[in-house]
Length: 609
Image (cartoon, rainbow, N blue to C red):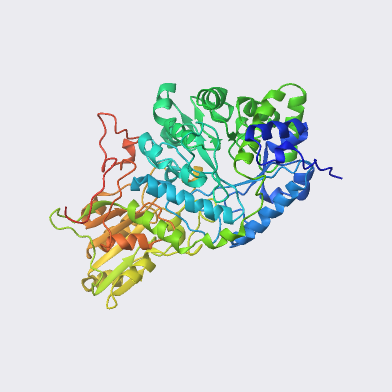
């Protein structure tokens, strides 16, 4: 039988200062309750007993781990509230904090607004737009019952061969710092007097943000995911740490450690960076969470000496461990390590203080359950219009006309007959990319949204005939004289993390051949849908009339049609240098040998000045 604490406890008094509440609650906790707060589990292993017997403090879902196929936000809220009620039934009634990878909208949930991935937002150069996207995402995340978004990723991208390229805002630390305004969108804007490094969440319409992956994840050698960043501390401080300073100033509540290494030492084991720099020098007062099975990676073979992994990571400064499945083993090993003195009670108390601080700051004790009045915000008209605005502003025009004095764009929406073709012209899953509905992403009509083809059909005149073929047939190409122009959409399939590492960076599915075949006989606009720069063969560059980098635009394809037909001008500027050949990678705009195909910041406009 669970014996509940008296309701007169100071920690239950919402008018008491946060630090007083933290210390009061901590003083009442047993060792099992403290270790439970440091434990994060995957929703598939969550049970009533996990909360009442093991005192689990946090739950998450992996990408693609859903209550059931096409579960809506209300279904997610039912599940999360069920977990929460179990946690509230424990002796101290400490609420869980539920985390999810809402990295471009609440992208795991069917029907949610899916915004452009970060690489596209970096092309907008619009920090206020990104803040507004954060605020919209927060509403949709809260509507689903979750409290914590594992965003933003503030990796400074140094090599497009990296499989997480599209999760970065760009290659320039200053640009990434600007775009980190997502934190203030997710959490709300702190008051001017707010203490730097202290967590902040404005209210019930906001979520806890998580800046990641500390630190240097975008700078690994040859762009290898989870690889080694070879750099002096001075370079780390100059290139990779600045976005974290920006986020700490915004009151970011949590930080996630990187899988990668710095000069051969894994970040999850690096006490110097996690504790001496992040917590002590930079003054971070929120909590530090591991990445998924991040501790297991500290031994070879992976997870083989789990006790050592726990001891190393927790002593390095990890406060909450994303276990995510074998939590009973984690709790047992962690308990043994504390009892043997290999992990001190002071370290445990520090970790738990940090976790409780964020839970109190975010209002979880007062409002642990879902506010169902937020459900109408999910995929609402205002949010989809915001995503459409983001798509418009993200498009980078790389070429417009074979001759500079004869621009090809904007297109004539009243043309008699146009050809739309390519693998990415009518594929919502490809348009959204990875981290959409599943971890790796999918193909097809995976959620509610508008493909490029849908948008083109809606935008053209009543008399315009739109011919669509995923791959152009010989017959169509042979009758090319009947077409005013062609729109060819090609690019990359969805991917995530290590599976996205790519040393060739060619347009997938013979995209270059499709482009060349069409452009031989029909004036052609190419729209590249990709998470990074890709190889542009000389024939593609020469034969096409116009070329647009659309990145991974998400569910609102109308944003592309808005610009190519001239309702809005192109505004996007390259957030990353576009290389000529992969052999030239990595490019560095600060060196004398810098020789890109298109430089960082490049982007044409379609309207004469």
